[in-house]
Structures are given as C-alpha cells and as structure tokens.
Length: 629
Image (cartoon, rainbow, N blue to C red; front, side):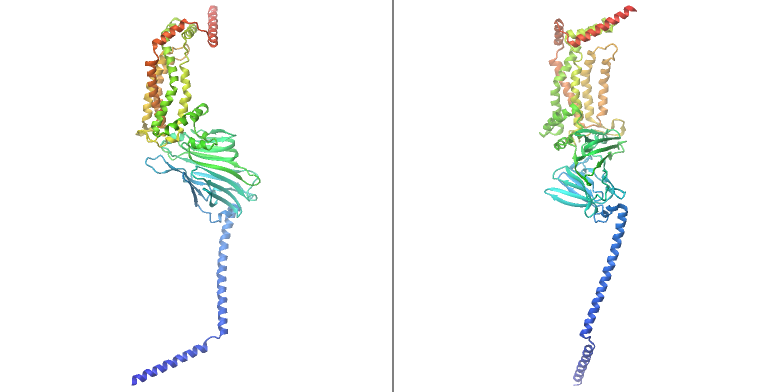
C-alpha cells in the first residue's frame, strides 16, 4: 500500500517539474521579432563570410595569373599568350592511317615521331618498326622577327592542337597564339592509305605582332636513323635531293660533308636509301640552302645515324599574311609509289642519268616488276631477269666473239708483217691496215660490242640498289637481297672489305675470272702490240686477275641481289660463248672467208682513203728527212 503511494507521489512530482520547465522555456522563448532579427543577423554574417572567401580567392588567382602573364610577356612578347594556355605542355597528338603513324608535339607544333607501318628494321627476328623520326632527331623551326625587336623560335613555343575530320581525312591544326584570334597555324591532313599528307602554314592577325616586311626563315632538320643491315651501303645511298627551276634536280654529295644553294625550289628530299622524307610546296621557295653532314666516320662505332640534313628556306608574306600549301611524304623510297604522284619524285631514286635512267625506268623496272609479280620469289625473279637480259644481249656477244676470232685467224700474217717491217713502224702500220682492209676485218669491231654493253651494265648497277622490293627478301643463304649475304663473321675488320665474308661476291668473282680468261685472253693474243703504244695484251692478262679481286672487295658490302645477278650473268655468258665457239663460229670457215675476201676488189671508204693518204704523206716526209741526213 505504501509503495503505491510512493509511485503516485513520484508521478505527480515529475509532472510538476515538467510543467515548470515547459513554462520557463516558453517564457524565455524569443518573440517573432527577435527570431526575425536573429535570422537577418545570421544571413548578414553568412554573406559577409562568402564575400570574404570569394574576395580572397579572386585576390589570390589574379595575382598568380598576372605574374605568369607578365613573365611570359617579358620573354615572348605577344606570344606569351600561348604560354598561359592549358596546351602549354609537352603533350603529343597522334594521327594515324593504315600505313603511317605520326605524332605531333604541342611544343614546336612539328612531327616528333613518324613510323612507317608494316616494315621492320634490320635486326634479325626484330619487330621494331621503321621510324623515320623518333627521339627528337628532327625539327621544324620558323624564326619570328617581332615588331618589338625579338627573334623567337617556334620550336621552343607551345601550339594549341585541335583534331577534326573531313570525310575520311584526319585534320590536325596546331596554332601558336598571340591572342584569341591572332596565331600562326600548322595544318596537317592525313588521308587513308597514304604516305603523303597535306601540310599548310598560314597566319592570321599577326600584322602588328610580326615584322612582315621581310620573309621568315624556316629550317627543316633531320638526323637520319640507320634502318638497314649494312651501315656503309645504306649511307652510300643516303643523300639530300632537291628540285628547282621548273623540273631541274640535283643532290648533295653523299660521300662527304657538302652544301649547296638553289632558286625556285619545289621540293626537298632527305632520302635514307630505302625510305625517304620529302617536303613539297605549291608556292616555290624563292631560295634555299642545303647542308649534309656525314655522321659515319667509323662504321664499327657510328652505327645509329648516317647523315645530318638541314634545309633553310624563306617564307614570304603576301598582304601581311603567310599562306603556303605544302605536302609531307614519309614512306618507302619505291619508284612505283613516288612516280605515281606525278610530281617528278622519281628523280629521288638513283636510277642514273641520261640513257642509264631511261633504260631503268622504261625497261628494267617494268620487266622486273612483271617477272616478280608471277609469284616465283625475288631470288628466282633475279635469275629469270638475268637470263632474259643475257638472251637479248647475245647478238652483241656474238659480234664481239666473231671479231676476236677473225683477229685470231689473221694473227700469223700480222706477226709476219711485224717481223718484215720491224725497222719501219710506219710501213708496218700501213701494211697492217691494208691486210685488215683486204680481209674485211675491222680491228675496232671487238670494242664496239663492249661499248654497247656499258649502258646496260651501268643501268643494272644503279637498278638493284634502288629496288625497294628486294628489302628483307631472302634467297638461299641470303636473308636480305637488298644487303650483303654474310656467311662468315670475322673477329676483325679488313679495310675496304669489312668484318664479314659474303658468298655471292665470291661466286661472282670466280665466274668473272673464267669469263675474262675466255674472252680477254683470246683478245690479248689476237691484238698485236703497236709501236709507241702500251702492250694491251699484257695489260689484259693482268686485268684477268685484278678484276675478280676488285669485285670481291667492292661487292662484299653491296646488295646480294646485285652479286647474284653478276654471278648468273657471267655463267650464262660463259655458256653462250662456248656454244658460239663450238657450234656457230668455226675458225676454218672464218679463215676461208678471209682468204676469199682478199681476192675481191674492195672499194676504200673515205675514212680508209684518208688514213692511207696520211700514212703515205708521213712515210714520204720521213724518207725525205732521212735523205737529207
């Protein structure tokens, strides 16, 4: 009963206390006016705080940007604007199609990496792609002469990139800005499946920034990477080529450091043997300076770079602005591709001048292309091509051998004349010429066929180093028909020979030894020595041994495809000579024909009559002098 009372009292007390607390809270609660005033005060404090924060941020940021702007402007003038943009980094932009990959850097706005897709470098089992440009080995720079007397270089400043498309073409514009609407622009357009890209340089709104009263100097530089197996062979065909004055072309000496100048230049090529970089322009460069530095002093050490090329050209303003439409080519130095652009780019290929280049362009290249297209492999294509060339040249070989055979038949009679008139050289010469005339033999007939073969020989010598299709194509032990076919690596280096032994040059040297033994030996025996002249017979005998040795040394670092051609060519020629000697040209028949010719009355030609008269006059003068004595 007592516990219930306590519980009731507790409850009553709790209620009273709660009531008192509620009354106190209510009596002390702020009035609506006070609440309104408090809210207003809090709002004012909040706004004041936000203003303080914004003011603080605004105050800090402009100070930083202003400092950056001032420093950039102090260094670069109006072009300091470009240094404050988000693009002022070393970032690169890639544009790529099926055959070519290009990377263009914000810094300088030029190509810093050019990869020719589908082709590997020389290392065996390597999958390292051929890169014409990489690791800062190339640059494009324009010297900007500003109105505030500065000389700025575009390669050191930052361009703003923008990538768009035009149909299937990728377009990259790089703008070096002096303000929102003031810039120098490089425009790259890469088309599908093309090694050639459009390239333009133009300016906008720079009339008050850049001095437009004189041209700007553009410099293109490239340090060419080695991409082939033989650095010496590759360097021999790595050269700077240019076209000028409406179709003329020239090049710098590839064997040494050299410089040159030209006017009205339409393209400049930095050729790297089997790959090339070309800058072409629609608006011809009024003048151009070229320089080539050879970087291979010692091929055992200098194995990374071959040449350092530099070209300097002026960019002229028209109406206060630049506007040059140009092209870049990065790709194979292949005749069919370069000739297909119909811009005289085939002149970049070292096919030879005059008739030699004509033979290569219109005979050898089409014929070899047809043979190789049937799918028999490039080694067999060279053999078939060689057989075809030798068959075509066989009439010349026949004429040469026939002349030697006639001279050989006359040798006893010539020896008899030499003995009879040994004390009278002039009379001996006269009688010898009479014998030739009566027998119907021309002593120069053996030389003419050899001279006729020289254009073909030289054209082929230029043809094989220019054949891109032979690159990294194997045949028998040769793993690359465009380079040497080493079968033994030597632990030492032999001057003018190398540190390896190539087999095809050895075979070619052996074949040329036997060929010369057959032809030059007979020719030396059939050619009598002339008074006052060197003994050609002895010289020819010496050449039988010297020529193969020279070929062995000379071709050890050359393309194995060329050595294969000469090996097969000499074998075929030896075979043709044996057939002619044993089955076509018979010495007894030649002797009978000569004897028959002697019996016939033969009319002298004007040349022969003139020569006879000169000899007779000389003989008469000599006789008169002796009589006086």
